[in-house]
Length: 385
Image 1 (cartoon, rainbow, N blue to C red):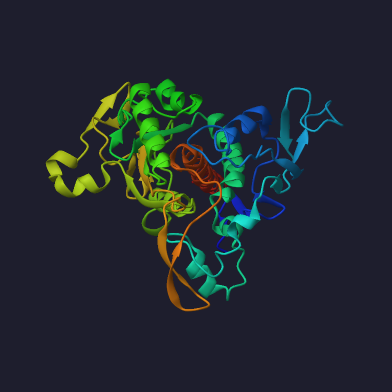
Image 2: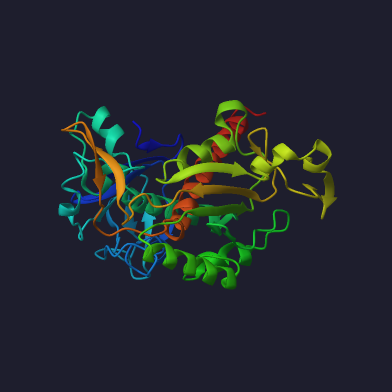
């Protein structure tokens, strides 16, 4: 199914933007994993709508209701999250539902006949014979990243307990760029600090310029896109497989599940095409008794396998396609060209709210890879190799 991801941790996302609720089922979380649910809620709040001038006015608390798989710690029976706000996995699939409470479906009544440019309306009309849910984009909506963030929040906590930290920041809005991560010596505090702020950037001054650009686009009835840089540190060397199960492959599959992502690059990415081998190669060295590289143009991945250096990638996010300006479209019933004026509540820029989504996607992919390595090591130990 297209809404499922993973081999060792398997997630399935369900629901539509304006259905009664949306949610996720996670199969493969080991029993005995302890989760700080207040930290989960705080992570999901970073993605939630209606919190500032650069997001949609739709109000959703995005509080997950746990249906299965997580229980209060022993001694806290009878409470929803335990006295300390923690839940423990019992080995059963984890299922969480997020209620949709602030839908305005009437805003979408005419879009079944007149598709929105750069939305999935028309291809969905052809694929599903006009039975698709048009309201809010249905199953194609960015609203479905809320359960993705819940799943990612759990995976992020499991990784952190094993010394693997990850974070992201807005690398650019339009042509305005933030201070990039240090690809060689990425400090944990720097990695995590952007996500702790109201506007996830490393340089607050550049962040103010970005917010001014977003405000300008909104005033003009338009939108703007940008780039998100995501990184992880503490990864051991050796995660991933060559060819089709490489680290890039796993990350790309889930990152492109985030609506509006149109491009992805690891390390130097497309800039590598204009470098010479002598410029792009990462020389090895011994530092503190460990093998590492002096530079990190590879972004922490070689041959589909982690190198032990910081893993760094960037994702391009397109401008929000729902804009107030009139656009050219067609009437599918009359088969003639017509104008379209989109109504409703929309983000003038998706990028800020997509930052935690990117972190969630990376966390899920890395946890899946981590479990695969654990399974391989277990098989090796059983065979006495």
